Each structure stands twice: as C-alpha cells, then as structure tokens.
Amino acid sequence: MTETNTTVIKDNSANPGPLGLLAFGMTTVLLNIHNAGFFEMNSMILCMGIFYGGAAQIVAGVLEAKKNNSFGLTAFVSYGFFWLTLVGLIVFPKLGWMTATSNTGMVAYLCMWGIFTLLLFIGTLKISKALQFVFASLTILFFLLALGDAAENETIKHLAGYEGIVCGASAIYAGVANLLNEVYGKAVFPLGLITKK
Image (cartoon, rainbow, N blue to C red; front, side, top):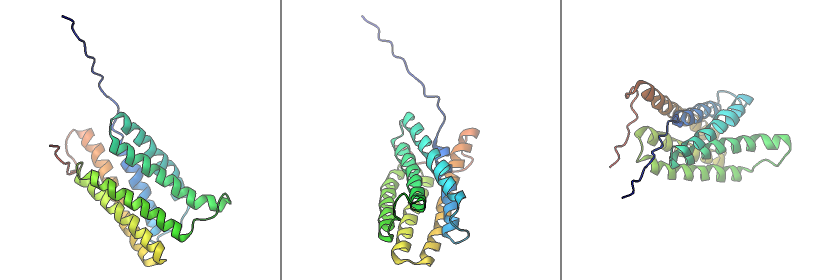
C-alpha cells in the first residue's frame, strides 16, 4: 500500500483589509470635505487620490488575491483605479492632454460606479454590518454626486459631501476595527460579523 504525503502550506501573510479600508476612508473623507464646501480642490486631494486612495488600495487588493478573497481583490483594486481615473479626469484636461468630460459624461461615470457599488453591497450581506454600512453609504454618495451634477445643484453636491464624510469615516472605523481587533485578539471595536452557515 502506497502512503500519500500531503503538504499543507500555511498562509502567514498579513491581513491587507485594514490598509485598503483606511486608504479608501481617509481619501474619501478629504475629498468630501471639499465637496461639502470647506476648501477648494487642491493638490492634497489629488496626491491622496493617486498614492493612498489609488496605489495603496491596489496593493491591498493584490494582496487580497493571495488570501483567496475575491471580494477584497475586486473591491480594493476597483476603487483604487476609481481614484486614479478620478484624478485623471480632473488633471489631464488641465494639462491639455484631453478635453474635459462633459457634465453628462460625469453623471454617467458616477452612476456606473453607483451601480457597481450597489452590486458589491449585496456581497457585504454575507460579511459584516460594518461593511454593509460602508457600501450602502458609498452607493448613496455616488448617486447623490450624479444627481448634483445632473441638476447642476450646489446644495445637492454639498449634501453629498457631508454624506461622503460619513461614508469615509465608516470605512476608517472598519479598517481600524479590523486592525485593532487582530492586534488585541478580541473584538475591541465591533464589526457585526455575519456568522457563516
């Protein structure tokens, strides 16, 4: 009788979730402080969009692939490239590389991201209450921004800014909670994890 030896490879890599959530959350808060009317669109927001909201989320998403987490991979890489495309839409026309996107084009862009986020929200129903709030509030944010652009209404855009601050703050909470719960080995900050059946 032949004996079969099985080698189990243990994944000891770090959890990339906190990095992705914090990169998304902090960049979202800063952009939406602008949307709420507190300061102008500036280089701080654009640099956060490229390097933290963009690049760091993409890195987190690629690391989620190693964890066999398709949801994390799809979400972090997609929103990382969302930030890079948003910066491109703002900066490239100013550099003369392309014409500025029309108002209708921006509405289509924001609506598509809203639909994408709504579909990902369905996935959060199997993960945690914290992520449900992040994705639900992000869905609302995209559609509010689209409505503000479609109506060319500054009040709606400012309202979207305040809602976006809440959305970003909820992602920061989820990121810090994941990180500190792991560090302390217990639920320091509740996430409302869904029990898998």
